[in-house]
Structure formats: C-alpha cells, structure tokens
Length: 473
Image (cartoon, rainbow, N blue to C red):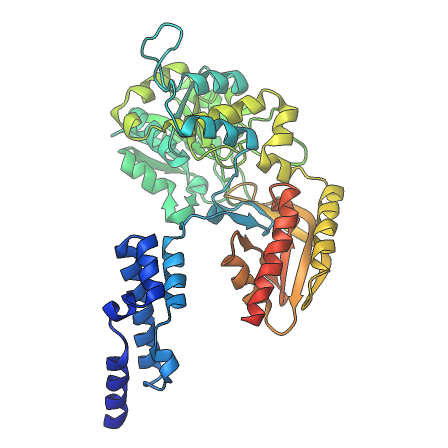
C-alpha cells in the first residue's frame, strides 16, 4: 500500500508545471492568439484531468499519459471559449421543447431583430412629433386588434403576469380558486406559491376532481377581491370530474361585482382555433364570455418570444401598468420587437400558419412529414456503418400545452454498427450544430416534425456523418 502511494506521488510530481507547458512552442503560439488567462486556465484543466486519472488508476500510467501535448491544451481552450448557448437541431418530435428554448422565431421576425439589435430604435419615442412615446404602444394595439380586448400589457413571462394581477387586485385580500386548478409548472413553481408571494390570500373551493358553481358562491365574502380560474394546460383531469362553464363563472363574478381572472398558460391567437389543435386555448372566446383579464405565455402556442401577455378590461390593465412592480417585470426592446413582428403575421392567418415555425410543425400533414422523412433517409442510407429505417412516430406539443394531443408523424430510426445508439446520441449532442433525437428500443429516432424547414434535412444528415467519424478516432 505504501509503495503504491509513493509511486503515485512520484508520478504526480513528474507532471509538468503550468509554466513548463506554456513554454512549449505550440502552446506559446496560443498565447499570441488568445488572452493569457484563457490559455492558463485551459492548461490547468488538462493538468487537473491528468491528476484525476492518475489517482483513479493508482498511478498506473505510462509516460505518454504524463506529458501534456499542445493539442490537448488547444482542445480544452476551444471547449472553454465555445459559447454555452449553441444551435440545436430538434429531432425529438416535441415541438415546444422547454429544454431547447420552446418556440423558435419566424424568419421574418429574426430579420426584424437583426435590423434593430445592432443599433438604436424608437423604443420610447414618437417619431411623428419627437415626444416621448409609450414603449408598448405597437404591441398593445396589435394585441387588442387580434383579440378584441380593450387593453393589453406585456411582462416578462406568464408567471409574472399572474403575480402582477394578484398583487394589484388582491393584495391582503381573498382570491378564490378551485382545488383542481392549483397547478405546478416547470421548475416546481406552483400557483399557490405565486399567490402567496403576491400578497393575496388564497381561498380554496371544491375538491380535486369536482368544483361546482355553488362552491364559488358560498366562498364569496366581504373580503373577496376576485375569482381566479387556471387552465390546466400541462395536465388533464379525466373521469368523475365537474367544473362550472366559464360563462357561468363570469356571470357569477359580474353579479357580485368581482373581476374574473383567467390564467390560460398557453394560447394561440388563431380564431377560430384550427381543428388540428382540438382544445387549444385562445383568449378571444374567454374575453367574449366576460372574463375580466386573461393571461398566457408568448413562447408557447403563440410561437413568439418569451413574455407574459395580459388582455382584457382597459381600466384593470391601466391599474396593472401603473403598479411599481410592472417596471420590474417589463420587457426589453428585443422582446417587444420580436412580439410585434410575430403579431403582424397573425394579421394574415394564412401567413401565420405558413411562417410561424410552431404552427407549421403542429399543422404539418402526414404526407409532408413522410416526404421529409424519406428525403432524410435517402441521405443517411449512403453512410457506412449505420442502418436506417423509415418509421412512424408520435410527437408531442410540449411546453405545458395540450398534454392529451398526440402528433402522429414520421422519422428515421438509426442503428449503428459496432457501438450503441446511446453513444451515437452523445456524439450528436456534442456536435456543431448539436442534434437531439429520441432513444427507442436500442435505436436513435430522428423525428422530422420538429425540423425548422427542409434545409435542416441536409444539415442533420451531415451531422450524423460527422458523428460517425468518432469511430476512427
């Protein structure tokens, strides 16, 4: 034991110092190309990995593993300076993949952002008279036009929208909500937690599976500020269930002089909702029933940037906008620019279906998906060392939207020879661009529904070809 420890100590002492590695000619050239701190950090990472391996293996390494070649320093440096947020080809079949940033922006929106991002813009300036303007004017007008709402406000996400509504309208007072609607969203954030943080006192009514109109009626008291209805956008409640229609709830709230708030979570502005998306929430029907305020996310079914959209009674919207917390939750110019450009597409529903990637993916026909999958398989068939097969797939909407809706489609299943599908998936994730597929029955399935457009077919095939080169390394 003592001999082994002594041998390990000797091997560790034989590792070169940081300065010795920096004096290597090829490493010295890196110092001329990159900041010294970055190169030194890369050298230290390589040396730390050497020490880890020596300790793990009891010092049983040959001299080749003691030396630190410049190629390893260069590789460590390249990995360190590579951007953490990188492009990913989504071949999972999950359209609103939260881990991948949810909705990709339409090409026209990206072009608009590119024109504005590198310079100045009239964010709070009225160009007609040169006076200070309202930063949300452009999106507010479009949102009211498209939804029929009297007022609109945009904050940084939907949880912020719910928080702001409750803070302004129910702080230190009671907000009634059904037990069956106390949902938990991503990151373990829960509706009751948001309510408590806002200062509202939650009054639960009904049971998990059944809430009646009379439950709400009995709960209304002198300290009741509002009724909150939460759409179960990320799960389904089925079986022995009951809840009052939104029209009945709105009539009750109106008769008692209370605002009815509706948290849709996710929504589309297509009105009517396409038959291919049964049950998709939309703000227009809710507003027509008399809901006071409705809120939803901008980066889900809408297909725009991350934000929380509030629509409804203009007086209530004004009260929200004047609250100091609205300043803390406000969005920046790039979010507003992206949202405005997205909303303009909705002015022509056909253009929205055609140009907004989320809608294009959700509404793609079976024939179109099969054509795309065949095109991908033709390219992959040329690659040696891998079997490919055209297979049916079942995708998901994702992003806490339409959990009961399955999306039948097509993809290509890959079975590599000589290594596992898991290994291929790892190599693809580490590529440039990264690729994310779905492992199923010892094969890697690439679902073509979630490709941005046909141009990604060739990029995806090349990514697989590049990943296969790992076999020869």
